[in-house]
Length: 257
Image (cartoon, rainbow, N blue to C red; front, side, top):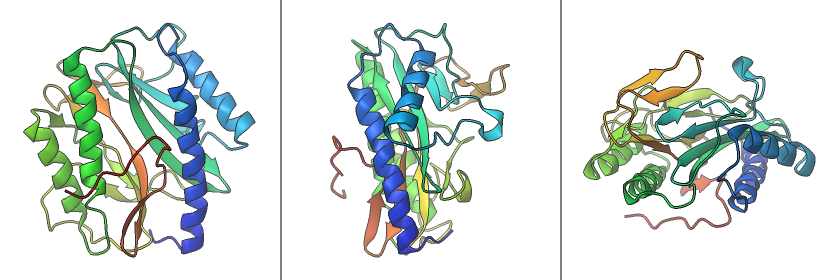
């Protein structure tokens, strides 16, 4: 689980490149485009422009470079030519990238066109909840501190936290130890050490936290059909706190609250 300073720097380079993928997507008009079109656009950018590898493609038999989870889809949405984004949608793009043998993982939920205020609030709160968890990362803290901060922020806003899926250690492999739950009790769980690298990726539901996997074996949806949102960053535990390896140029790290 512990990465050397040299390994963290290699992971930071993968994270920087992945952040540039999202910056590229930020400049694209999403409404009217299929999720498969977005998948192909991202693949071309990673391979041709960044000379990197889309780490999700081929993993566990998955044939695409990203997951696209729209509206009631919680995670693992599969790109499709017939799944066309419309104004009012929210959609999460979960993208991974490998460079020099090390993988970065990040996701962002986009607002497509004019979005209902309730959906906008869910997306904003999910982003805030991710940062509440990130702000707890430092040597000596516990993973329960991270999960508790996320869940408390979500519940205060009236949302539920999906429990079936969690963050994870990452490095040369996509999924390494530890598991990073997005709920928990402070002062419990694994003690964090300098050199640990993992993802924090909460999924918040507007309704109940229960989820259901569709017949394709991939797509996970809310059981009650209500909206879900997600954000994700890859982070490293440093000597004096946390380093967000996939931080995008447009992002400002919130002050600790």
